[in-house]
Image 1 (cartoon, rainbow, N blue to C red):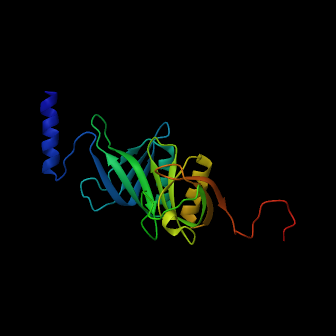
Image 2 (image 1 turned 60 degrees about the vertical axis):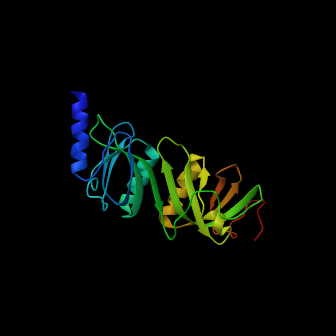
Image 3 (image 1 turned 45 degrees about the horizontal axis):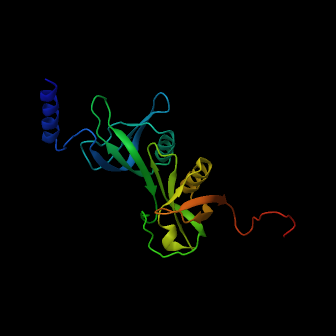
Length: 208
């Protein structure tokens, strides 16, 4: 009986123009049309997309940082890219990844410029911010005047305090000054600063 029901579900989905298999991934892009709070840090997010099958349908988000990003994006009426997975046995499918970007498309490493330095600086505006469910890191790219090719590639940010600062910087377009280090396949941001650099400086005082 269970097998018959599963087969019926697949046939019904195919008739609607979408193959729905548990665990299948699919992408959506567009504005957020609905945000609904749930219990235990869960929220539900709906998006308006060109995909008539999933558009404006609520999806579960079980990651607090992803919920914050979705809420901010809704309030600012911005677009977001989401990756979702099909789930059986529940009312909703789930979003597993959110990405917001502006001005130019950030890219995933390998980086487009060679860099032999163990550490380097990035300065500019955040043009890409990506979150993955269950990963405490965030991933950012920087569009600016220093290390252009490296900056446009995603960097991992492991500290939640840095992620919070950089999300705010993305949302309001602030200039950031970042320190990065080479760590393998994807380089890491190790410090984050919002400032009118070089106007702001580190003590000792009296440098003006």
